[in-house]
Length: 418
Image (cartoon, rainbow, N blue to C red; front, side, top):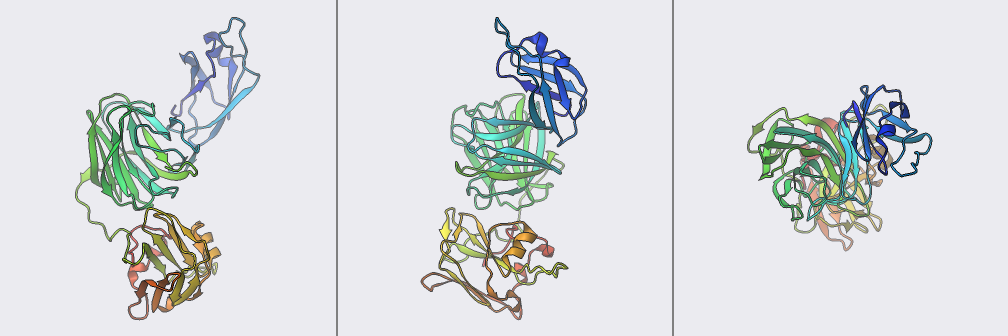
């Protein structure tokens, strides 16, 4: 509960005299305990010296009794471990699969199952209690693809009840973009509005409250914002924080949150993207040549990071098995080669080198030939139909295929589809 308070929840009601006895508690690494206060029959809040953000602590409890007529004493040296953070770790409902929170430099990574929406939610939720007006923002650095509708964002809730009312702004892995979502009637169906493209690692979300009005925004830089939606909801204080859901009962998603805090800018306006968001480029196929790294920067370690990237613009998976790359490079995709809906596949000259440099796993190859020479690149179907074709201008591929300053990994945003 912040960095100077720890709340302990017991499995049954406890005797106040034993539960508030400071000598029954010890904390490692050592923290001074100034007070122990019963919050209710089963929980005790300890006032402690300031914890270090991101540090793991272990609480040892002895001597605490329950309220039975013949009191039971907690097992000797009962322990629980936790990580110090500014947000309270919690859950809404019972998300499946379960999740975890990892504190990293500048933020948290939230591994999440569950779902948000419909008439009830089930998701991990890291929150603070916030009263009155507020204006917060967060940068979503990345969100892994468990489903095209996986989501991560800023949410304000009137309660932690799964069917409770809420307002929030969310990002998805790719094709479902960013949007505003709310439930205005307890147990009612949620309603979404607005659309704004994702731009990892610079997808910014903002949630503002003024009176009873909650408004959600999205942006690319944390300074300029596009409004996605607004709704009126009563309630004070509210649970405000970071939430994620995989929307897949068999797989978690990982949401990387950075720079959570008070919004630093209130500039609202129209947005003109620097390019067209990824989408189908041919009526022949939903697959797209989304990036061609034809001139990787020279590396002192000698690793070869030449690659091309293929994007599935449909919201459902498809199989590239039996398809071929032809032209300046040649490669036949083994069967099956599944590309999830809204997902990417990287084909590399040296797959191990690309995996090592960029820390990704969705890499196949190697192909023969080289992209450095320019020329022609084709995607050919299993029945020999030419689905995609790119012709280089002059001696090299168009510069539009070159990631920013050679530093952007595969799946960087605003790659042009051909």
